[in-house]
Length: 315
Image (cartoon, rainbow, N blue to C red; front, side, top):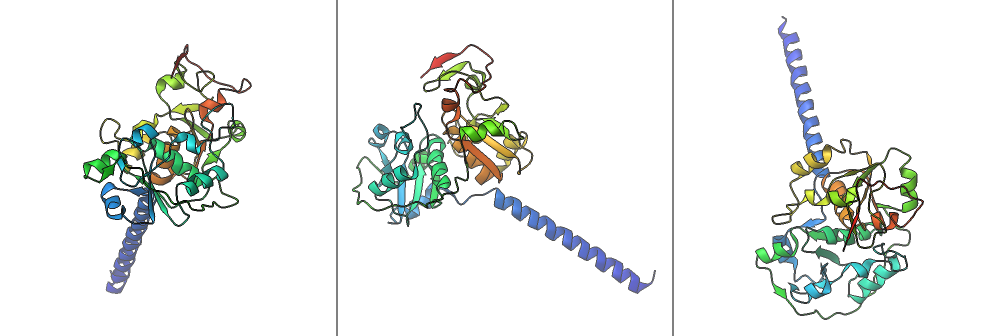
């Protein structure tokens, strides 16, 4: 073979390999970008920022638990504070005016970054994250591991209620509602290609158990089951599982990141957590959390349900 031709062949081969390598690097980088989130903060990171006046820490637990002990300086918010009580059933997302008043009364300003924690694997904290996302307020972080993670690194705790200086807090006028879906839109989606994910327990899904607030037991037609708690180390530190583990768990149900996925639970709390996992940790593009979830759906006699067993009512 002519040496000039050999050089050309080798050069083409080298450039081809280099191009393939660069392509894989870019794909790997893109995959990494979709598998990480700026909405997380670890306890040791928060420890360095806890005294920063621009950081507002929110303890998202029941007031009686908060009053016993909490992260020093933390403000308390609980579920009723972010709910719309005008419905005949509970758990619906509060309107923007109520959120604005709540935050203003707590001394939270638009320039603040909010760090939310709970003691339940970020299940409750994710509900507030989800609401703020819908209203386009994105300066939010979730404390991985919650209150226990803070105590593990000997972060300062207190029973003292912080002094509050009220502020004015404003949300945008026409929010995107990016992760929200209503009952009416879900009814329409059931006739399409959307994938419906029930994030409750197996007993709730089958209709064997009916939680307080629901009118009946059962599930929404076409829905598949995957308990929200599969995403965390539920029996351990309650931190999120690794992205690799999460991919194995959710990828079997939803192989395409472009799938339209509608998640629900009893009142949109556990499914808000799953919405966080799917969108922020796994990079799914089209995820909606059904606000009213089973609590709302079960109240309407004209909406179809599926039951596998006799229902037992539980609190």
